[in-house]
Length: 115
Image (cartoon, rainbow, N blue to C red):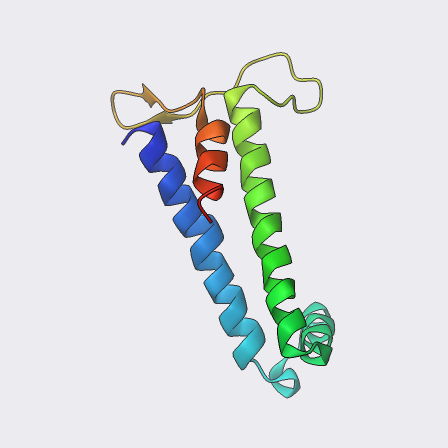
């Protein structure tokens, strides 16, 4: 696996597949079946929106997932600092500990531009 393959896989798994799960949950869950108060409030909000605004709702969720993923990759790359931490983070892959860090955030953001 190389860094580009990693960010494409991350985008697919974290952003696209999870967005699909959220869409399914919000669109198919009956509020009468929900016991969790957070989900009741979230479903009440979602169900109060007209169809066009529901699409905007999912766009906001998608953007939040993409921004969060980008921020985490920035910390791993050393572009963003976490709690004034001076030590560098790195991401390795496989038995040979091949480094994936360094340009992950930029690669991810380039992939996001294609959306």
